[in-house]
Length: 406
Image 1 (cartoon, rainbow, N blue to C red):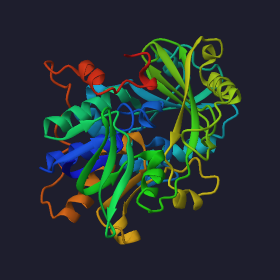
Image 2: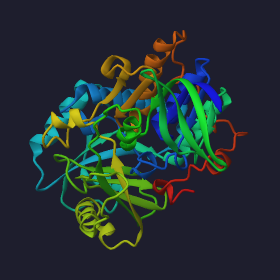
Image 3: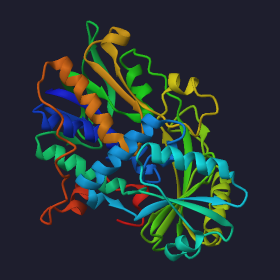
Image 4: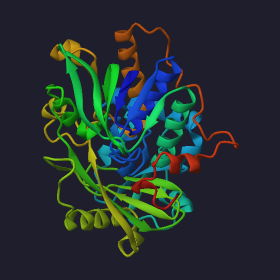
């Protein structure tokens, strides 16, 4: 049996970010994940660094969080970021009023946004659709999930955190209404890991983790396909400037372009059909923006599962275009189960902010003083002597999203 101050369950971006934040505040933190780091939603995303423009007209608060975190990540994790910028492209049959609404909302939120002509856009993207009518340039970018997760985890480790990939939790331990740790599978069998507080950062699997403590966290997982095609040197993210729908984004990943995505509710984040129609629709729709991808060789397809929080989803019928916020659930207040906090929802771009909010809540529960410093200190790998590729291998953090870059 071993012990720690805080056990973080889940090694995606939010989990490793929480471990880093807690360790920087002097908390003894241990993180476990059932697979390699980033093997869930984080590593199976399209890796978009949001500028906030996608959500500006529907969710000003969420869009404001995105542009704030966009700037922070470029500062502390520039070695994990790519792409020059992003274009929102209005095609001939897209509603011009929607373009105008998005542009006005971006400018109200101080999200840098310039309207450029199709000819100017083709200087960067010669293959842009012939019927492109207007283009809005915004500071979207690309997050390389393997690099980001490994860099964050290695930084957490430098501050004293213990990071344990490939250590599945088989159940939380509850004593007298308090979560006091977990049973963790190891190479040698099983281990009891006791903790003063447990953070459930398991994403789409958060409900399953909470169930083992007889706590209800209602998740509404939604699958989406990503299609990686051979298309080198795309310098910008391409977004279709219409209400969000299937196949409306193309994200550059060095020698490839990743086409995304669909949105289909699933009952089980581990068991769902990988359907051909999703791939075909993504290719067909993304080819409206960038015609050569229709005939480009598909290097791989992979599905991610969004960690959507059920009560929030129930309030937004048909609300795919609305930014999803994140939720920090204090189960002592909510369910009468002490020593247990869950963080769900959000986006890859806002993972650091989610981790900060979670660490604030946990430190308050533990009586730990100390403010968040994660926005100011560069991540591991920023200095030439730090080998991020070695950290990716050591932490088992390679992911499908980075298939072209590792």
